[in-house]
Length: 442
Ligand code: PHE
Image 1 (cartoon, protein in one colour):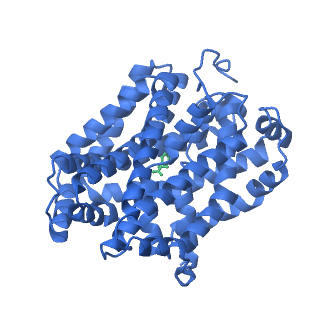
Image 2 (cartoon, rainbow, N blue to C red):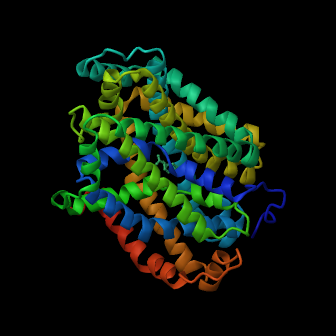
Image 3 (cartoon, rainbow, N blue to C red):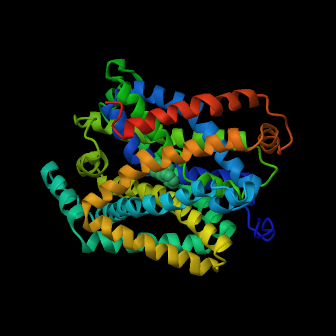
């Protein structure tokens, strides 16, 4: 039994640019600017990039389309969508897992969001200037194992999320995405030119574009698959929730392609900010997670006007993190308002308070942080993605899916390809990532 009619007074995005800005805002995040470059550094440069592109195209895009179409077909939050499309069946549990994943990802991600604010602040106040690598390393270790300061910045970061999400779909999410995404783009392009103009920058470009296939192993493939899920924000309901706000006029295939292109472009651009500078200063490209918080400040510290570039870079990171976290908060708020009949303000506050408590635990207990991070990219996202494609292929009828994808008017030439990809390739690939994540593939 369906409890409510398909919410008539429901908000939606007001323009194509708004849709793409919001969805790309969710996708572009720490995954692109922080994680992608260091994975690239560790996994053979351009070889990894090629692999990533291949997987994003064949698996990422079809899953993003599947998710968006579940949202748009039902015009509901991620749990309500499954209740609506398959009343009385246990499929809504996929939505429950998605809402759970939103809490989990938000909890650890906001902590890193807090680090970006700390580094922005430290760059602005010029407190990183003149520090040696060892001192920067100490700074990083000291700050990330501290308690009060990270908590303080986490609170500020959450507050920003709350303000934006309380503003609603158009007045909050869309409005801020339309402003922040272009700003992010301008900053990243500016930083890229600065980095490319350093003496010796070319070695970094070569590293990026000359593939080293010797680093390519089965594990690299798994890493790339996991990164596609995380970076594209697929497998937990952000794209379903945002999809439910997309008008029938839009073609979901085109939307997913645009969002994926922006997401990948930003990952490549941030690599073009980071590697030319890393090579110009004779540093190593495979510094891992410390690349952005230790190696880069070290470079900025040696550059003329470095504090300015450092401030811009960490502002960029904070913006990228924020547009991703408010998409996570929206997943929960949409559920609370539509299914539990809470007011938007109340829903936002309740969700944010719970998330903040979880984040504080992540600050306090590094092990909790690691567990949540592991859980999200290795279990929740792939399992969610698997159920989403299974649902679209085996539960929704083929013509229903086709109609929804073609709701924009034009026929979709590639529909058979899409169908084949979600029917065979995506589930197979996801099964592999999942088994690997559990360590079952050795
Ligand atoms: N896509 C975001 C990033 O790359 C992370 C994210 C994952 C956000 C899942 C929402 C949902 O940083």
